[in-house]
Length: 496
Image (cartoon, rainbow, N blue to C red):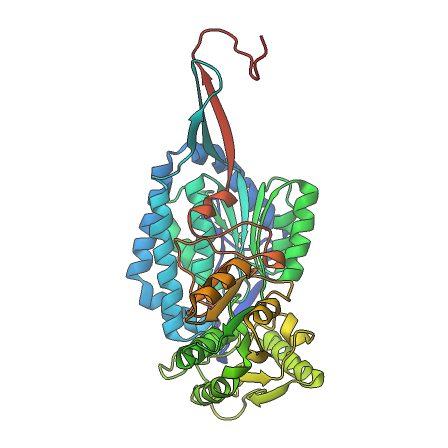
């Protein structure tokens, strides 16, 4: 077997190995025998070097006009558009999702590049009246400085661009630490920004494991802000460190999303939404539909139709156009999902379909789990409260809209929730009372659009939003400016 290609970190405009000289490999989750490359196993020394490069580049980059900064993002989006099919195929091989989902991931990155580049000419502040004569008041945005961008593996193009794009437009310089499961896509993304001429030090790439490279990035004293997407456990640790160091911290964490089905719903549409929301990307989305809250008057037809739909799902390599359910990301995640399935059985939930690892011809070298549907799931069960991040969902029964909303709100998370109903009263009651940052009416829980703010309530995050114009708030401070042209000292609040 040929030795896999060795890739490097990108610091101050140069490609270089980790100081340790060590590498780790990226494998195809559908076929462990395919190694896509070897990547630097970085540590605190590499992080410090990248932070120094970002700090050196900051002043000049901060002074660069905002439209000029945004133009680099636009050009990167155009290259992504040209290379969409190549990147999609590599994404399916490295991350595992189906090819159509990989194309959507890249397309979302393209869309966001174009969107946030437009914000470079809409970098709006506000003007407001002053209380004194001959005085002008306004607000402007100011970049927060050097920032760390820590991203997950499930959307290896879209989510990094959700962070890189607004950081660049805002005038921040960055250290990008991607997930160790998808380093190849991160490297190719960095190559694209290099190819458009982004100045050295503005965006730096550090590969490695979270505890070895991510943690030093979070705790580095010269890093003024951290944007992190990942698990609740690591998010808590990140928030604690950032709080002690008084640095900006944006967290996008887990969730336990719900789809509510009322008696007047179009059952066929609700079933398709449930299947797509629960099993797209093998349930490895922070917006995945892991709870199905179904009114008892609709439960039987919904359950029958859902099982019929799931039984038709083909599981296999995402490169197969007929596959709907691709592998989970790695061995560790596979065992985690299977452990949760066992917990659900112990808690008294009934497996209606799936519930096992798939082995045998076609599955022997990958991380494959059959799509799993529980019934009899109740709010006190761990499988109804904890994020599984795999192809597992469960049906929960309800007798009223009020109860359905209470069940949906009963977890510590609050990212995405959907309700299927034709009733206008039920619709607006759900909009008003659901404790979720993203609410869909007659649509699946997955499917974010770049012009809308993305983020959750409660333990799903800490109040920041990605995408939309709100994404600039992660990387800027508001500066209040007053210009007094009276020619004398004027004291505010009526002091003579």
